[in-house]
Length: 143
Image 1 (cartoon, rainbow, N blue to C red):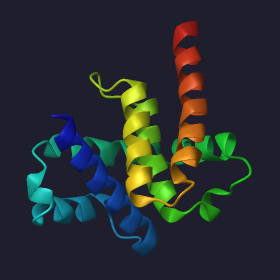
Image 2 (image 1 turned 180 degrees about the horizontal axis):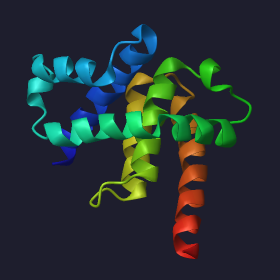
Image 3 (image 1 turned 135 degrees about the vertical axis):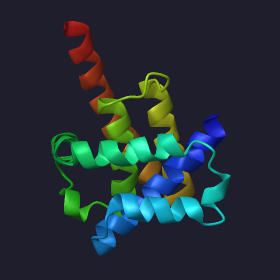
């Protein structure tokens, strides 16, 4: 299952990247991506569409968290691929699926950064997500 979810995350990340670059509807891009040859390998389409919907729902909150936890980097100046990875991972941290612990979401994001980002992407992504995860974990334990 995790391999299929990994592919879902890759397609959502790529779709978000395209959405940011072209301004096209994110769910339309994802639907097209899931129908091409690479996308057909994804068995859990629902997971991909749920991630997409969560990004759309929490877009402003995710941008705010990036501003808060990466203050030296204006959101618009972050490498677009790193930004796409952050959006996917942060939505998984703030609105998690029941069977995806924060550690898994962070590790998946780091793997995406290593595979698709530059030499510093993994460290940058890890630092931002780790800070957000500590914030969300401590907020949950206080309630």
